[in-house]
Length: 177
Image (tube, rainbow, N blue to C red; front, side, top):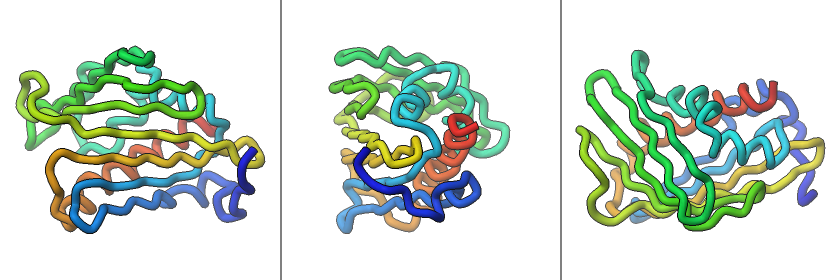
């Protein structure tokens, strides 16, 4: 165990809305931190198991969104593909390659976000997920993402960060039950 869990994060209600998401000054990267009410193995599994991903991942998308594909092969060199139909946007997909897998401590991936169908093109985002065990069977997740194109701060916080926070809340409900 690495750290004590802050008292306000010991309950699910205390953790809801607790994600700390920060966009870099130049808009080219972000970090997200969140405590979950489950040990690292359960958090890792929620990030890599298609059955669990289908429950929490779409929670941050607009109402009426449908996840149509959810595949994940969490081994170094393995791939993942999440496809959704989002009202007002159409088809969107996350194509990824796992570049490092250290279950249950974390993983790295490169990812392409594609709108409107088709395959990945251009440079990927790179992601690092780290899961640190806290006292009481809790986990602190740290996500670091470098994006190929800078993001506008207001748009990023209203769309990407808000969707991520909502999805992570849904994941905590799933794994801490």
